[in-house]
Image (cartoon, rainbow, N blue to C red; front, side):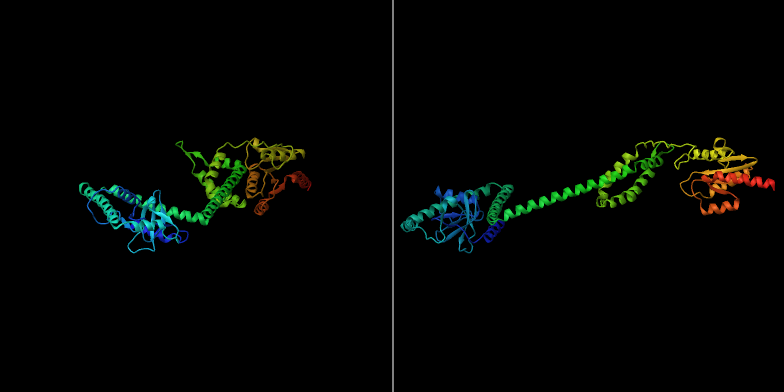
Length: 435
């Protein structure tokens, strides 16, 4: 009851004061605080039954029904299918808003007076008729109340049914309130504004989601391009790091560490360069899947390098480079033997002429030649009882290698210097013999 009363009073306070419809209650009108009780009470009153005269209420403890006189104005609060929720204007203390059947109230203009026909009917009604109508109304109300009391004594209270009635009553009040509220908002255009704002927010959300999806796909595609570019190296590293142990189990530990380092260094730097690093974490699972797909393919066969001992080329085979140096010596009349054909003891080429013997260490390098070549050819000179030793290369020599060569009397040559070198040796030997 309190909740229903609070909802009704909230509806009264929130409804606008202008454009109200004023109603007049005919004589002997009955209003209740619930729609169902109001319809039942008025129907029972119209079909009056003979009962002893009781108090002027219709089960007041449950439904709070009142007999209303014709004086005063009533304004509408909420409208149902068959009933109207009205309040008296001005409000009367102790008199809450009441439901009346639509066919039992008469709408009238707020400033208009009560029609003359109604005044005439009220003045012509005799006192006896008034008493008779009042008695009939009280008899009907008393009959309904007596039935409710008997039902309460015979049957236990159905709490589920009682709760459902309360829920239905509150629901009807709340629905009526929000219906009127929505009607007010529609008239002021707020509903249309809210609709436009909701549509705009949904559009912005869709656009944002689309842009994020495009950025994510761009990140994935950029990562895949880097993997395709480095496919050969990744396939070689996979073959080096994935192996089977003595029990036949494939071990991926080193390969997994390699992938993690590749993602954190090369891949992240690549994405930063292409301004895609914001989606690195989200795109990493898909990029790693593609990395494994490419890395576990067989490396493609590289085209064989064209190599010949007749001509020097930076990309020639190292064994052909040894044969190329030996061929240069043969052109000068020296007997030259490539040791890779018979065994290597620190010398790649052994050449001799007129009692002179020279051992060569041949290095086809893309970087400077270090101490190792000097040490090897110095040892080979003693092993093969040679008089001279030299390192021949296409690359420069480090400073430590140059210092070690001076100490061990080893010549450091470029392969283009080799013909002049052996001619100087021959000239030096002839001068020594004549002297």
